[in-house]
Image 1 (tube, rainbow, N blue to C red):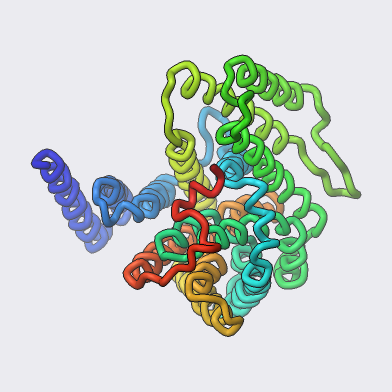
Image 2: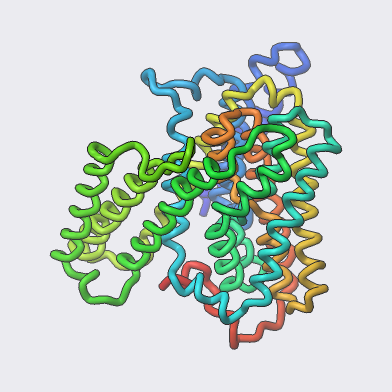
Length: 445
C-alpha cells in the first residue's frame, strides 16, 4: 500500500507541475510549450485513473486527451511513419475493433429480439430518429461549415456503440436488452446510416448511398460476423474447439485463407455501378479468426491457462485503436479544430444530453420498466464514434467531417460514466425472469 500511495503522489505532482507549466507558457505567449506540458498532465492523469478504483473508468478518456494534445502540438508525428500515411490505418483499426465487438456477441443476442420485441423496437426508433434529427438541428443552429455539419449529422446517424453495454451494466440497466439493441442497430446500419445521411446531410455534402452501404458492410458487418465465428471458437461447448488438432487446423486455415484473399482475390468482391464492396474486411476477418484459434491453442490448450483472457485483451486493443484513430484525425484538422473546437464540444454535449433525456423519457412514455428505460437512454445517447470516424475519412473523404466523431467519443465516455455511476447509486428492483446475467461479458458464454 505505501508503494502505491507513493506512486499516486508522484503522479499528482506531475499533474500539478504540468498544469502550472501550461499556465505559465500560455500567459507568457509561448503557446508552443503548452503541448509538452499538457501531454505530461493527461498522461499522468491517465496513469492515476488506472490505479484508482473509482476513477478507473476515466482512464480511456484521459489517454484520448493525451494523444489529442500530442497530435495538436506535433501533427507531423501522426501523419506518416516510415513513409506510410497513417490515414490508411483507420479502416483496419476499426475492423479490428468491430471484430472485438463481434467476439462479445452470439446468435442468441440477435434472436433475443423475439423475447423482448417492444423495448427493442422503441430503442430502434429512438436511435434512428432522435439522434440524427437532433444532430441536424444542432448543425444548423451552430452554423457549422458544410463538411463539419455533415460530420455532426454522421455521428447522430450511426448505431449505438459497444461501450453502452458496459455503461448499462454499471447503471443497473437491462444488459441483455442493451446487447441486443447494439447488435440490431449495427445490423441494420448499412441501410439506415446511408439513408439518413443522404436525406439529412445531403444538403451539406454529397452522399452516395450504395458506396456508404458497401463501406459499412466491409468495415463493420464483415468483421462482426468474423467475431461471431471467433466467439463460437472461444466459448463454444463443442468438444472440437478444445482439441489441439481442430484448433490448429482452424487457425492455419484462417491465416492461409486470409493471405490468399489478400494476395490473389480482386480488390472488389462485388460491384454495383461505381460502388465497390472491398475485400479488406474479409482479409482482416479471416486472419483474426485464424489468430484467435491459434491463440486459444497456445494459451488454453498448451499452457493450460483458463479464464476470459480474450475479454481482458480486446478492450486494451480497442482502446489503443480508438486513441490512435482520434490522434490521426486530429492531426489532419488541427487548425480547423482550433477555430470550431469549442462549438463542436458544445454540440457534442447537447447531442449526447438530448439522447439521454429523450431516450429515457420516451421509453417511460412507452411504459417500459425502469431498468429498460435506463438502457434505452444510454443506448440512444452513446454512438459508434469509431464507425463515424471511418466513414468520414473513407467515404466522405473529409477530415473536417471526422472532427465531430472525434470530439463526441471522449465526451460520450465521460458523460456515460457519470450517468452510470449516478444510476448505480439508485438500484432498481429487478425482475430476474428476463434480466439475464449481470456480467455483460457473460452474455456470450
